Amino acid sequence: DLTALMRLHEQGFFDLDADVNTALNFAVNSPSHPNNPITYRSLLSHTSGIKDNWTVLDANYVLGDSPIALGYFLEQYLTPGGSNYNSNRNFYSWRPETRFGYSNMGAALAGHMVEALTGVPFDKFCQKEIFRKLHLDNTSWKLSNLDVNNVAMPYSYKVSNNTFTPYGHYGFPDYPNGGLRTSVNDLSRFLIAHMNRGV
Image (cartoon, rainbow, N blue to C red; front, top):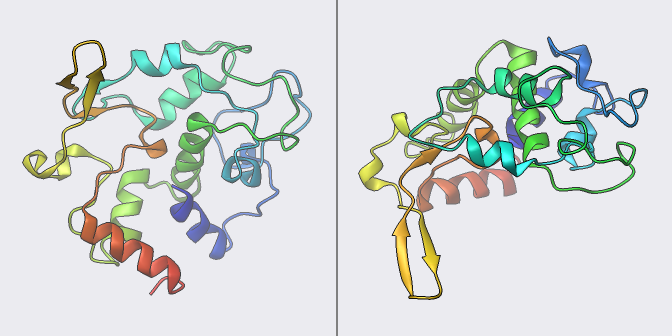
């Protein structure tokens, strides 16, 4: 998600220190510091003050791709009155950009900013503007675009009896924070492109 958002920054779509609310169709503010905007820079650096409420996140894992739209899920999580909103569990009390707090939901919002700025769903933007251009033919945010027989199965491990249990191929609505599947060859091409300034 960071690569996609920074491509838009390079094209002049936004200033790093701009308030993300200028592009969103719903407002995101820190409940403890409503006058301190959440900026693109704070999303990219994990200093936005958005907290991961795992009670909500865990409850939304499903087998296959999530049917819940990214923007809708974020709106319900980040705005007062939303079905998953909790001012204490979804946000830190410190002022944005004053502390580091790794945030999956902040990363998901960074992915949604691509949608807000371009009008193109995040996964489709990445497919067209990054994956196809780098010939990453075995890379996708969506399981439906891949042959799951070629996707590594995630397992849980139980120490007490030394057993592994398959989770199944799962998805979640905040997928830009870790839902990408790729091959070793594709990942290598992506890293080489980063090292060679996009080539």
